Structures are given as C-alpha cells and as structure tokens.
Length: 174
Image (tube, rainbow, N blue to C red):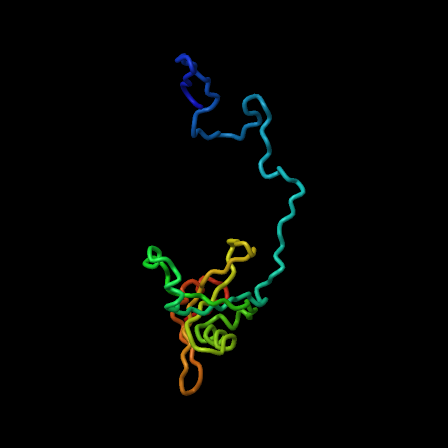
C-alpha cells in the first residue's frame, strides 16, 4: 500500500506517507496521525495473572508406553504402496500415573519407576505432558527410553536415552 498505486485505467496516484517504513520514534508519541495513541499493556484493566496450582514438590504426571514390533499380519494389512513408508513399531499405551519428582531424579530411579509400574520386560517410553494440545486436551512427549530385561535376580532396567529429561528441575545427574 506504500508508494505508487495503479488504478484500473492506468492512472497513477501517490500516497503521502505519514511515517517512514521501519523508522523508530526517539520519544514516545502522544498523538499519531492526529489521534491519541493507545496505552500499551492496559487494554484489559481487569487482567488477573494465573497462579499455578502445582508446586515444586507435587507429584508429576507420567505416562509409560511400551514399544513392540508390528506383527506380520498387521504389516500386511497396509496396502503395498504404503508398506515401504510404514513405521513397523507399535506403541501400546497405559493410563498415566503420578510420580514424586525425587523418584525421577536419577537413571536408577527412573528405571525403578518403570519396573514398579509395568512389571514386565520390554522397551518403554517415559512421556511427560507438553504444552501442545490434542483432541484429548493433553499431549504427551517422550523424554526418556528405558529397556527392562529379565535376569536371574529379577527385572533390571537400563536407561537408553534421557537427554530430554535433563532439562527438568528435578534432575540431579547421571
């Protein structure tokens, strides 16, 4: 809209620019184009800041999901054109649980949480709620991957990947 404007009949008209593009005011304006300016940050005087209900020591919501390879019948149910592009991993979800942050602060504690909740061997994703929303109004993202193996002493967990969980406040160290 700035500069030269053409019309339907080929005539040219010039618009008078009241301000240069990208220019910054050296002092705050009281009037702009003859009208008083709006006071920024006071558009909604009844604004009340959000006070979080959750505190630092409260239990965290965690979802543990099992990874399994797709069965041959499940793979063959896809059309032949799509089969090369299909991810052959199936994720089996379970209800979310609440865990104290102290239990998730180390790799050993993270493995123990998975063993206590699932009581079976396999590869598990530890997921935390994220800021994004889905149809169920809460979306989980994988923050750690844990493998649980059966040994002579019982179930033993090994954390394969946990670099995303290191950003959280409760993480103490490797």
